[in-house]
Amino acid sequence: MADADTRAKWDRIAPHFDFMAGRGAEARWKPFKQQLFSHMEGRILFLALGTGLDIATFPPGRDITAIDISPRMLEQARPRIEAYPGTIRTECIDVHAMPFAPDHFDQIYTSCTFCSVPRPVEGLRALHRVLKPGGGLFMFEHTGSRYYPFRYMLNAMTLLTERAGPAMNRRTVDNVRAAGFKILEVNNIFLDVVKTVTAFKAPV
Amino acid sequence: MFAMMPLGMLTGLVLSFIAGIWLGAMEAMVPIMVSGELSGMVVGMICAMDVLSFRQAALLGAASGLAGILLVWLANGMLRGISRETGIG
Image 1: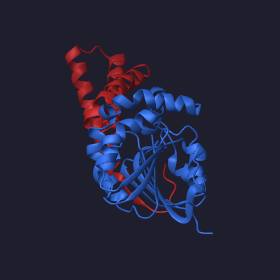
Image 2 (image 1 turned 90 degrees about the vertical axis):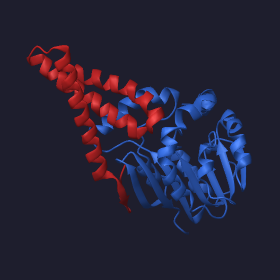
Image 3 (image 1 turned 120 degrees about the vertical axis):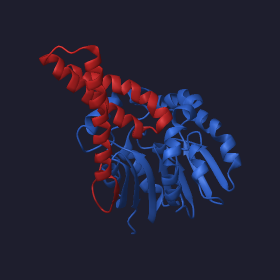
């Protein structure tokens, strides 16, 4: 899918996104996100801020650069950004075309992002480029499963969900490794589908 | 039986999206789909061998659906947790 199509898709979803994603899932996942985001330190890149649902789980007082491909998503996020007791700078850019200098960020965070990035390994390589050597990649993601019947169900779901939003069958941990990161830890939260991934860029 | 399995799965898929919004995305969607698949398979298989009343089919479907939820719960108990330096998913 072309990046313009991705932008149009998320622009279309933006007004309804909180209704679709903001209830059960956010209530259930909040403690896990809070735990993951509690590591935020230094110069931080947050990928795909969306409508800013995750901001409630950020520790206060951090200096965060947040990007998203959809301007309408960032519009929706505005009240949450203003309410955050710290600094969040937003930029409407595609992960595949980030203008940041190499080795710019100390840490990068994602939250249910790489189910939607059209070319995940390329996107992760772009993150690898802007992350400092030794810097951490912290991800909260849902992925495909390795096990029957879940694998087939998630493949079937993806046929429908990909048209309107995310893919349900990505192999994100393998993609992280393929992009050049070293995996430190994978924490399966629900089956092997909802998980946190902690990885780092090897020091030079 | 093989026709009923995707039908059950499809029904589960539609219901799972509705439930997913309110109950917690994947944690609701996956069990509902497994329930749908298992109910469709079991009811379809029994129907192919014997005549079932609507009530019998509904009870059988409900029991299979509950078994599906139990299966997901057990699988979740086995799969969740921390692994270091492994290649999951």
